[in-house]
Length: 215
Ligand SMILES: O=C(O)c1ccccc1N[C@@H]1O[C@H](COP(=O)(O)O)[C@@H](O)[C@H]1O
Image 1 (tube, rainbow, N blue to C red):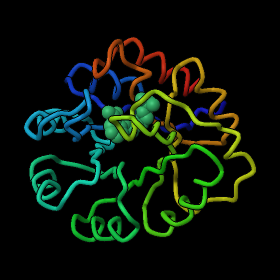
Image 2 (cartoon, rainbow, N blue to C red):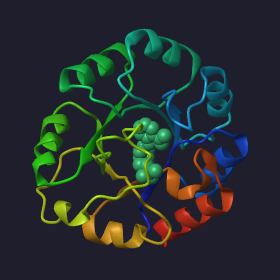
Image 3 (cartoon, rainbow, N blue to C red):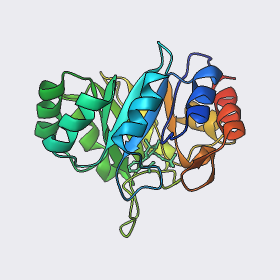
Image 4 (cartoon, helix red, strand yellow):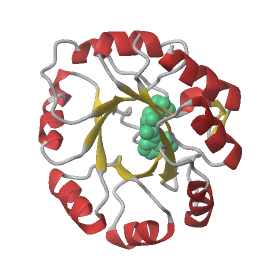
């Protein structure tokens, strides 16, 4: 596996786990702003965490169908490098968010079967990055962060995408090598696979995942 894989550790909520991710080689750290998530943090906590992120590690805010009132507060409070839109935001909403905040936007797209693939091209035209994640089950409370993988062979033989993209969904230290090999991903994103309990990040699991992805 190549060693230039870029890794995002998402759903961080403590200074210790942010430091572990950065020191181990993560290229991105993610903060979740979605009240239903066990990884949700408030703006003041996020600001403190973000201020300690070393230069060169991108700070990503994950939101789900957030309105401008919340995004205004977020952008005013937390120093950020990217917004991750993980809900049902339309391509038009992606463009509006990009224009309003002047930050790169990564749009998450849920994949369950080949019928979901055309969405990727629709968002490729407007987003700065794409996050290709497993589509959540119908009854799921969370639109992501469920520890579920999708059928990676759906991405085999795909056309070249013009935007950088990340693979997400059910990744772990055990399967990340196979995931990268099957999909050709150059970037990977993980949340529940580096937790000891929902919302509780584990430093050893973070270190092991990053080592496995970079190996
Ligand atoms: O992590 C969350 O709580 C979350 C909540 C709402 C939307 C997305 C969320 N997480 C994102 O989902 C991917 C996949 O997670 P997992 O590794 O399968 O647990 C994760 O990388 C986050 O970007």
